[in-house]
Image (cartoon, rainbow, N blue to C red; front, side, top):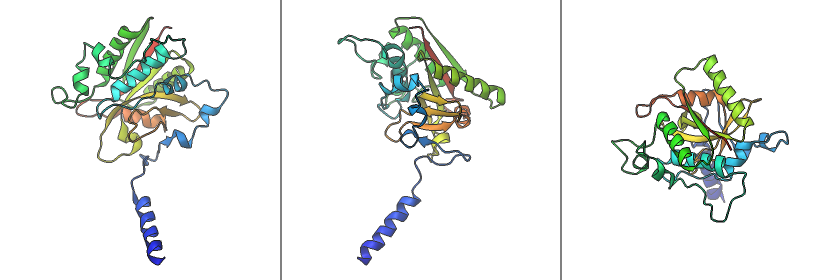
Length: 251
C-alpha cells in the first residue's frame, strides 16, 4: 500500500510538471472550446462561420498541410454549406485542391520533399492560392483580400477588430490567419508558422476562436485578439510576417 501511494504521488508530480497544452504567453492564455462554449450557446449569436466551418472541419494531412486543410474548409463553408446538394456532389478535398492551382507550387510545397528547400506557403501565396481555388470551384463572384501585419499600433489593431466584427456578421466570408502558432499556445522550440480559419469572434470579450487544423495536438481555442495580432506580426526567415486573408463569396 505504501509503495502504491508513493507511486501515485510521483505520478501526480510528473503530470503537474509537464508543459501545459496552452501556456501563458505575455500574460495571456488560450482557452479550448471544450472549456468555454458560452458564446456559441447564446440564442442571440448566429455564429455563421462556426457552423459553416464545423461541418467541414478537417485535420491537416501532414506536417506541412495546414494551408490545404484551411482553404478546403473555407471553400466548403462558402460554397457547399447551407445549400441543397445532390447525391453526386462531393465535398472539396484538401487533397484535390492543389491539383487546381497553377500559380504556386503548392503541391510540391506540401510534400515531404518540399520545393527549393521550403515547406508550406507564405501569406502572399495563401492569398494567390485562395483566389485560384475560388476561381476553380466558385459558381458565383468572389473577392480575396490579403492584409499583412508588420506594425502593431492602435490603427492596425482597430482595422483587424473591425474586419473580425464584419466577418462574424456575415455568412458569406471566411477569414484565414497566417500566424506563429507558438506565440498563442506557448509550445516550446518554435517558431511554428501556421495557418487556420477563424471560427468566431466575441467582440465583447475581444476573443477569437481559432479552428486550428493542427488536430494532432489541438482543438478549437479562444484567444485574445491582441495575441492573435502579435502572432500574425511575428516574422520568420522563411515566410516573413503573417496576416490574414479574407475570402468573400457572392452567393
